[in-house]
Length: 307
Length: 301
Image 1: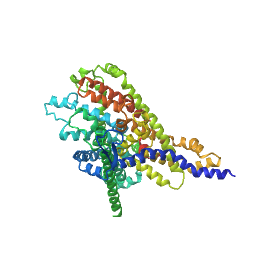
Image 2 (image 1 turned 90 degrees about the horizontal axis):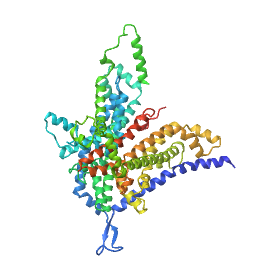
Image 3 (image 1 turned 135 degrees about the vertical axis):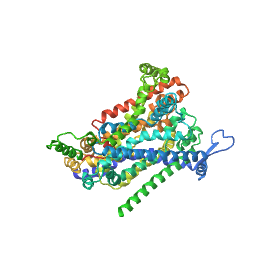
Image 4 (image 1 turned 60 degrees about the vertical axis):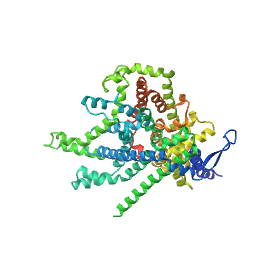
């Protein structure tokens, strides 16, 4: 009896045993919280009498009431609009820079690449909250070198932490923090293009710019799509940067971004049911937008392949 | 490989008779990309350079001297910061190291064994399990963090070290990377040979496969270390006792108190400087033997 039999039993059950920790963690920290959030979002607290004593506060079925409230909540909608504006700056600028830097790292006869590559990647190591803090100080007239220079030149000194410039100020923090990581992802896929692909182009007398536009960019399109996809998810959930800038300016409200509004409702007001509905809406919008983008990008790729 | 080929071609051209004069600078260095990249590097280093210099300034120098002129107050600043509320700053640093170090270690272990199981074995439900785990990466943290807090509150373990570490152990991205590394680094016939020798599955994994996966697992560890160290939302929600804060949250509370008290600015700035040092040092050390390419799952064959 077999050792063989015992062994095959071991082989068959081993993957399940090996995956057990991940599955348990997934159930406890992903599936259960999501289920609980959905449950909460469909319930509300009903207070009977004066709300005193045990049993005076009961959780009752609310249907889509919380969702209807959230969708007509002007604070949430204003926050969503702000974040859309913010994302419209961050994503194109960050990914555009990442692509340009990656292409330049990959170009011939470029010097100092190991230094510049590391320097541009460095902000990835700095927490978003700390990055916001550093830039926050650079935006403060009292200590900023920019204002020092503007002052010496006798030029007007805009308030970077208010109105329109606030969007630029916040966007800059995200661009600064995210460009390097995306550059590495794009650069890695550039490096995996086989050399033969270029040889034909070089023989045809293509300039480096033509090679970049006609060959390299189409070849790395999948990684561009991927970086875009993850950037949408990250941007819609911006939280730590505006939260960190808040102490430095009155222009960042406690509900500046949708996620800050969720936090405010859950812990500021203690209304976890509304917060759960809002969080669910943000999650759904995020998934719809990111997957919608992915589908659109894929179907375009297929069309181009068919042509 | 291609750069090597270019190098030898250049060398050949240089040794050809009649062309032994070095070509002009313009054709040896691609100026536009090099300068653009240097500008990019300058932009990325600017805030770091600023905080390094600002941390050397005493409170009065910060507002009176030119920004990029080093001051004389660095040791004074560090002393003042260390004295702030009986050295709570260093407690925060220690907490961050604990959260990130222990959390990343646990995360790497779970990723390694899951990735190995998904790469090596053929079993029913394999792709389903993989897709479900991966879907976790797409779940916005927002829909997770608040119910996680409420559930942990029911189990009475919020405001504890565990409440910040446990939810971050499962890393879908780590499992994804570990699967790729296992598939590339652990040959099926090596596993089969282990079985022929009568080794159990656990033994094959720990003694044979794990050592082969180490370079990839270092990447998973570092990625997760940075992710936990940089995390703000989860500790912000879970913790109320500031003795348990990680450095990101600690600096934030310091900033909140200091925003209206310019005298506290130097503390915040020195704190920020000391907080970015460990990760920058980590990056400089590891990049010598760690390829950034591994981050996006590229495996050298």
